[in-house]
Length: 56
Image (cartoon, rainbow, N blue to C red; front, side, top):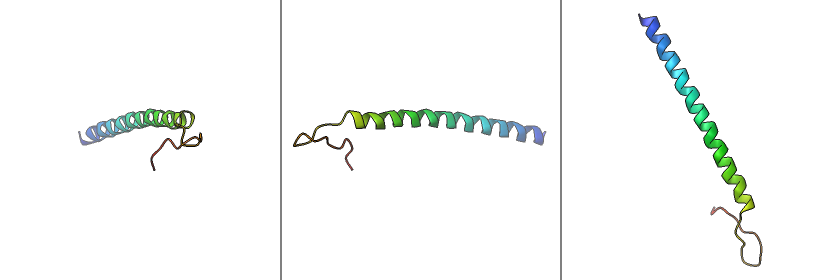
């Protein structure tokens, strides 16, 4: 009985990790797209230069 429970817990853990990694990949893709769009859509600073799109 204990080996079956351990195998089921391992399968559940691996399924959860796989789902989390897939979700993290999608989040990483969205962040990358927003980051790349920031270089294209930058506000103009004083003097006609392109300003920084981030605050730090």
